[in-house]
Length: 109
Image 1: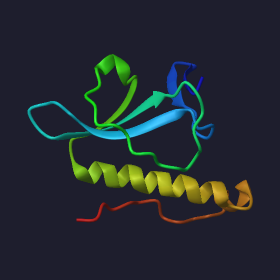
Image 2 (image 1 turned 180 degrees about the vertical axis):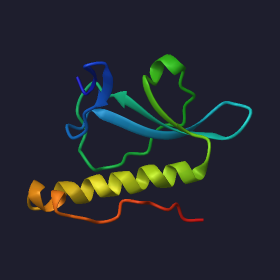
Image 3 (image 1 turned 120 degrees about the horizontal axis):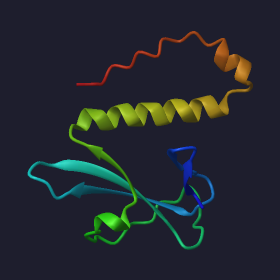
């Protein structure tokens, strides 16, 4: 199961093609962006984006959500994902430990 409770922390295990990642908006008094994670019944090709049907999903159908009140918050998550991807491509963990790059991230205006 790709969405699990791991010692009290919810964990989404990506990489097997069985997680649907969808953008959307929450129906609130203000525009609140959301990215929802749902489990597929069967695996799909990894890295291929398939357009989703435009639907209104009930909260119980979206067990894991990332919500964004400000567009700048999305930039921080994009940066963190890009850094995680870069780190995965490093030759060794030692090279990451010796990397003294400044991890202060400024959100573009």
